[in-house]
Amino acid sequence: MDNQSKKLIGLFIRYFFVLILGAGNLYIFYSILTPLTVFLVSEAVSLFTEVSVSGISIYLENFTVELIGACVAGSAFFLMFILIFSTADIKPKKRFYALVTASALLFLLNFFRIVFLIFIYSPESVYFDAVHWILWHLVSVFFVVGVWFLVVKLYKIESVPVYSDIKYLLSFSKKGKKSERRKKN
Image (tube, rainbow, N blue to C red; front, side):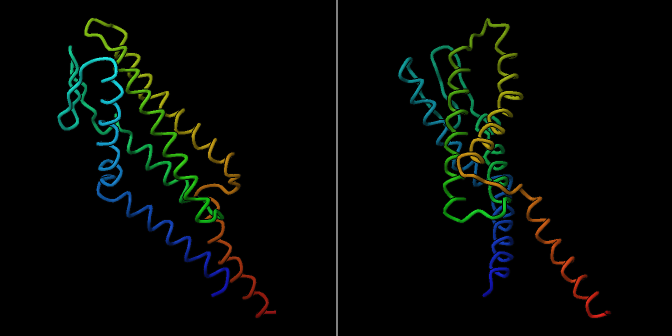
């Protein structure tokens, strides 16, 4: 099999994985991340106060924390997966390490975000909702963008997600047009 065929098959396999993992409302991401997040957050908080867990709820002395899908940030992990898998010219081993690095960093940042919010929460606080909104809507975006740029730098990724693949696929139509011109001349 020639190099061009391998590259084309690799491209379709990468996008197939993106479609499969994105199917079912990101079920795979949430089924892994939710219990892991609940467990680690409850363990961290239990170092400072008594905690009990039931499902996605963490019960503390004065209040309950419910870690819903948005808290777990499965969509951020999926976005990172899309960015890494829709980037051309990355060897499988390098792609794997980039994915592990990005996932670990996103998980740690999200973990610290949740623990921070738990420790600043107070039923009387007028600022908690504002801080929560800023961390959820603004800072989380910077987490994803920052992790992506770090992974690009660490793993020396030079191609652009999706764009490089489209450019490669369009090169086939240019080659076809060139060969048609040669036949006419």
